[in-house]
Image 1 (cartoon, rainbow, N blue to C red):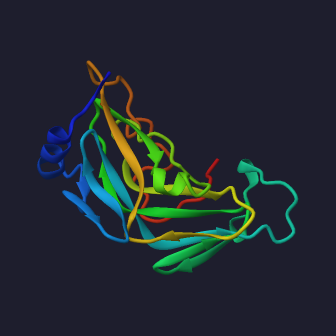
Image 2 (image 1 turned 90 degrees about the vertical axis):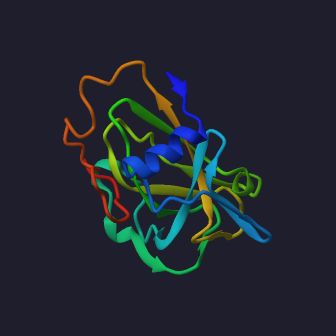
Length: 184
């Protein structure tokens, strides 16, 4: 596997709708950067959130996740409770080619504040808006910002396309349009 440079990402964004909407780069005073970087793409966080409110449950079980414990919230900023987490969604819609796999890492601006972002890899031929898990590891509320950078996607190209892609498997998170809680 090899890491793909900005020139490949830009070309694929326009030729194959790899990333929609695509931003060349956006940096500015008082804003968390997003868009194309040297070897990746910094995706943005949408204004849609699901804030985890345990409300009486004592165990989080991915096989029996109570979706009513995720309170919908819409706004330009979101407060994550101390030690809590929210689910968010990317602004960008991704269409991953068959010979590509991505790895996603949180932005250092948030990491340095005790906020981590977790996104599973985008598998070959997966497409959709990314659902992001954003955790607050601090003992106080933490603020995150919509329409600004949240995590970086690194694109890796295999020497040959995979035999069975995410689309071939009819993956349960294929073409998701909104924040998607666990599905088993």
